Length: 169
Image 1 (cartoon, rainbow, N blue to C red):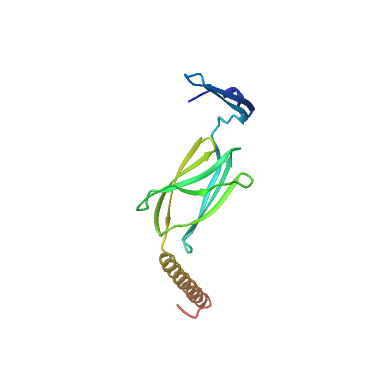
Image 2 (tube, helix red, strand yellow):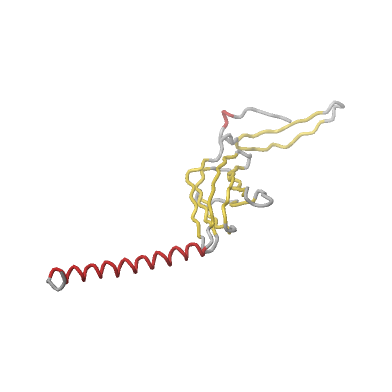
């Protein structure tokens, strides 16, 4: 294993060649190559998610600054057999927007953003996909409450009007 400190060459093209000799005196040369030193981790500039309970989908939105972006992976620890899955493997204008389906219930995600030399930035997130019948139930009761309120206000208004003109005591 060969290691070199390249900190002063961040984002600079470096030309190199390697000559290797074993103890028997046999040697091998690697032709001239070039690399760019990457010593910085990806920068997560923006993150958000939008939950669509009706479709049981979550849209993830990332903005990432990284010249050597590799991928975004996630692990949902609430799955029976959690495993790392790829969420995104390319950026368009420093952004990744992906929609994934999830089962109803709570989800705990570990998210990793990595570059090609394996610098990693991690983020945790939790969300719940609610069963749609709860939303329907709440919306129906809210609708009936609004209808009741509308009629109640109108009845009070009519009674007040009748009282003002002296029709009722």
